Image (cartoon, rainbow, N blue to C red; front, side):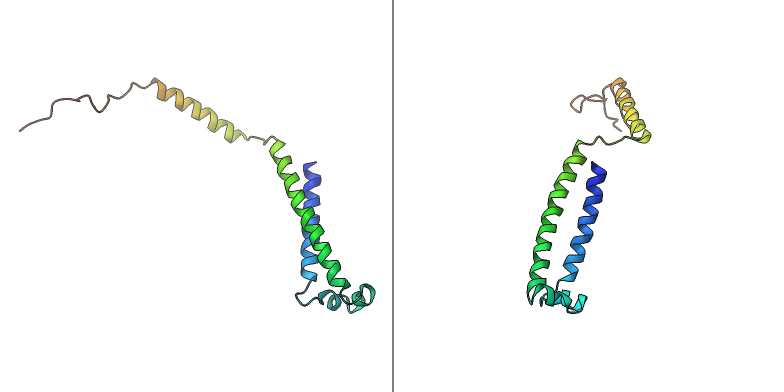
Length: 117
């Protein structure tokens, strides 16, 4: 399921990029891209409305897919490597070694008499 959602995420991302790049702030980018055929088929403002609606739909799909991927990743158990296992074992051994060391005297107890000259 995770791989399917990841492939879908890439497809949505590429489609969103293409739709955003096809738009223009003036509203005529698709006409220039297709050579005027879009304005004759979709009408004068039809191309920009179509691109705006497509952008909104793809953006919502992108966000929903991100949320689904996050839930899938959280539910997925991450594989641990041998290096991580070795580090955990060393940490446990170090903790056991630290417990075997004698405690240092507290700072309230005098360590000895200072030397005087």
